[in-house]
Image 1 (tube, rainbow, N blue to C red):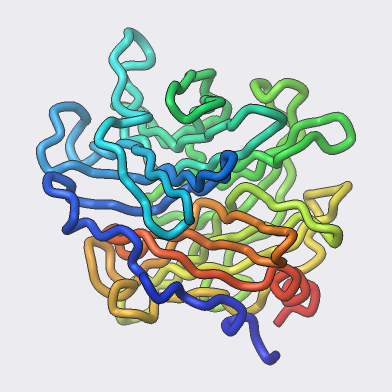
Image 2: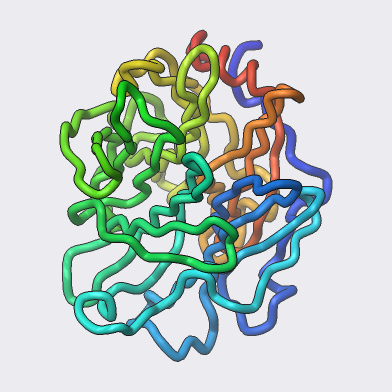
Length: 317
């Protein structure tokens, strides 16, 4: 294997969800996937044509799509995380998209990069659920700007950890940092992990997703942004972090693992974009299921070997 671009295969039924199949929805994108029992659940970013709440262009909400086979999904009509108006400061928070979901013990924790009307943002809003029927908002756990904060699925040496992505969508560079906490609310011990620009496909920005534990390290799917003369492109890659000292990068894919190639990945509301907010590892099958958004129009799936991806990070191919 000369590079890691051959590990993942796109599902023949792609796109699994298409914005045109949902009247009233203008954009549909960037799922955060989890397994709950025999269900595959995606937290899907949705922008409605005629939203009655929100501010300007920031009218994104989060809905749930459910599937028994991981292929055929039913998107719910009701918003799971949406604009909430319950007094200061919560009525300022809006545009709830690009969630990162992590299961810790019996609870699914969700970090949502929320915009704040009139203030520098986004910030990471922590919430939780046990059934994906009810949602409990907990607190804001990042300072602005921070987009894409992602929790590790267990404590490491007695502490919770999360990967941070300081910076918003304003064109500034985005790098990955790490922080630690005793209780998921109060965070400190900030350390840099990896900066954008180690390869051409992530020269502007990189961002994390919830890490996946393997016997060789914490595997993390990342996105990278590249803006050549022809426009901006979003790619996906992977890094491997030390199990005990997760701020240490012990491997990475030099090549991207998925790039905008198919027509549904090249043209839409946001051209030339593949973007993931997480992945599902099936250890028994040695499979990683990468659900991703394409062009803010579609939800897609690519699958590959979990062990091959880890080894690609170690070999830096």
